[in-house]
Amino acid sequence: MRKEGMVFMTGDTLKIFLAMAAYMLVVIGIGLYFAKRAQENSENYFLGGRSLGPWVAAMSAEASDMSGWLLMGLPGVAYWCGIADAMWTAIGLGVGTYVNWLIVAKRLRRYSAISGDAITVPDFLSNRFHEEKKVILGISAVFILVFFTVYAASCFVTCGKLFSTLFGASYHSMMIAGAVFVVVYTFIGGFLAESASDFMQAMVMVAALLTILILGTLTAGGVGAVLENARSIPGYFSPTALAAPIVDGDGVQQAVNGVPQFGEAASYGLLTIISTLSWGLGYFGVPQVLLRFMAIRKEEELKQSRRIATVWCALSLFAAVSIGVIGRALFPAEPALATSGGAENVFVIMAQAMLPAVLAGIITAGILAATISSSDSYLLIAASAFSKNIYEGILKKNQADDKQVMRISRIILLLIALIGMAIAWDEDSVIFSIVSFAWAGFGATFGPVMLFSLFWKRITRAGAIGGMLSGGIMVFVWNLLLKPMGGVFGIYELFPAFIISCIVIVAVSLCTEAPSEAICREFDRAAGKA
Image 1: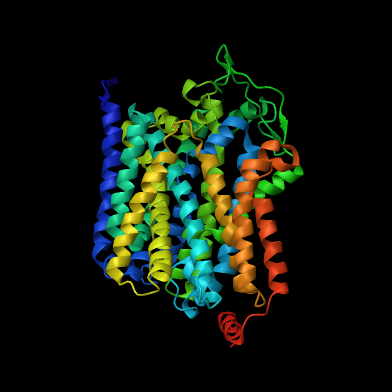
Image 2 (image 1 turned 120 degrees about the vertical axis):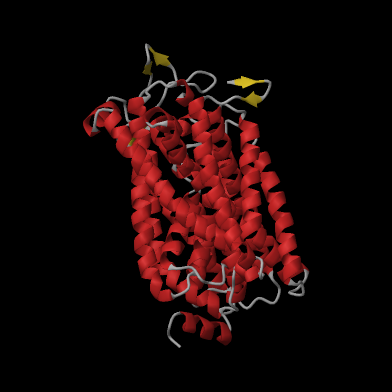
């Protein structure tokens, strides 16, 4: 109930709020615990002194990667138009997780230490090519700032939707409150606090997903009843089709006598499947995951981390997609879920409907967990991209002291948060769409250059610059100019942008002078050949 902008909580709502508040206090406690160590120097603040154990490295990588879209965006897509888009996305992400830990993690951990003990992704790429003029450093830092600002906005949208749905408060006030909490928390603890709390939050996330999956299935009448409902909707349960909700001019799905209306199923062809699977390519370029590879304490522990991360990812993605399908059976014509953006609240509504208030608060803390674990990573990495790479590496030419770097990083962190809040101001924003754009940006900008830098000795500095620029720019061109044309251009922008970046890297590298002997010796050391 709302009166003159104030929210008056009922008994159940108050219990949910208190449970979530208790969770937030635990997270703040973790930040305070690590605060002293984080403030010692910039390496501790940004990379934790390369001290992560296998469980923390794996779980924090996945929690910071998945963000609130795992509990809101992905179930929302499945609820709205069926399994195809959500399922192929989940498969791509699952395979990408495994392959990234298998082939990239060990080489990057070793190479980043050899290449000037790099503590950020731009640092590593710049050091890899022995840059004197820090062009790669500047380009990569700018792209990180741009795409992580978009990513942060998606997390703020999640906060706004979550709290406004739970407590009946205005979206904007709740979005701002969530953003302020994340900023304060990131200020306090840095990378160690972020990674330790991400471990806890990864456990909360998977527990929340599995709890709602099991309870939802039982409440809906079992697996058979859920499948029967899904199959009754044209294209909903097909891997090669999309359900097509019939909507009015405001995008609200129409219902007749409580039955949601669907039109003829839309085709989901092979090219679309391939482009959706390409979500997995994004893993090779997302800094929040790559940093965990760089920060783990021992190479030998990466095998255990890979197993942990893969199992967590598979369980969580399966549960998230299934919850959307179950939600359609339980709440076929729920007004709060009647738009593509509103459908992203299906997890929250299921938790409120099926659980006592205190448990609902703990479960929905899973969404808060996902959002915090991601947004603090995004803000920290984006701030480090400017303070360490642009300010210290380019503007001050490595003459800035640690205190200056830390102070600048906090100023930039605030600016990024403000811009992110501006992007998130539209309460009709669809979390899945925002995340997909930022994910494509990182995957196409950094994925190809990271893979070639780690595994191809012949790549040149010019090839790396060309690949980064072509990949990053093509994401914007494809999404904004080509994709609206539809047809073959309607595919996910990550796929064509990634391919174009790879082609440019190879072509430019072969047309320019081969790397120096010193760079080649360093490459051989990282490859274990010297």
